[in-house]
Every structure is written in structure tokens, then in C-alpha cells.
Image (cartoon, rainbow, N blue to C red; front, side, top):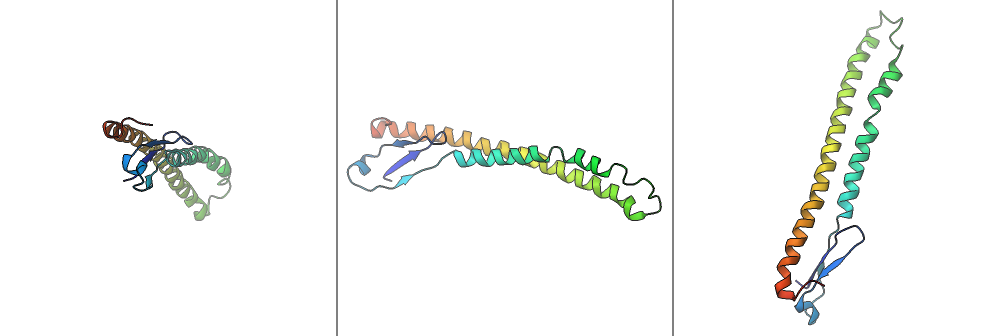
Length: 129
């Protein structure tokens, strides 16, 4: 392995020194960034937020819809369909919230792994640059 690059905060970059690479033994570098994970978490959280007002919007859209339609069975079924959609939207909101938390946990785990790897190279490489 020629070197390991560790990217902490979006836009930041750190490189762990590899004596073999410095001696001309190759230039491969392993890179990763938490930026993609954080953007994905923000997207999931944004979707959760976007779905928040759907229930009240459905309520508003259905106000007065059933008035004067006592004999129409198709409209009577509308309430059951609406309740089904409300449950689905709430379920999707919950999933988005859980996904955002899991994606942020990946960032934390990567950071911890980076520190462990960095510390393990220190005695061999003479310290982190």
C-alpha cells in the first residue's frame, strides 16, 4: 500500500505517510470523505421534513368533499384510502428519519476508524503529516 489519505470534514484532506511510497514504491492512495454520507443524511432528513405537512394538506383538500354525497359509495371509500396514504406517509417519514441517523452514524464510525488507522501508522511512519 503506497499511502492512505483520510478525509475528515468535507473539503479537508490528510495523508498518512508511507515510507515505501516516498522511496518510489508506488502512488496508490485510499481516499474517502464523510461529505457524501452527510449529504445523503441531509437529503433523507429533508424528505422527512417535506412529508411533514402532508396529513394536514390532505385534510384541507378533503374538507367538504363528502357533503351531499351520501349515496355515492366511491366517495365513501375515499376516507379509507386517505387513511391508508396518511399511514404510508408517516411510515416514510419514520424511515427517512431513521436513515438519516444511520448515515450520520457511518460518519462517526469512519472518523473513529480513521483515528485508529492513523494511530497504528504513527510508530511505523514516524508520525502523521
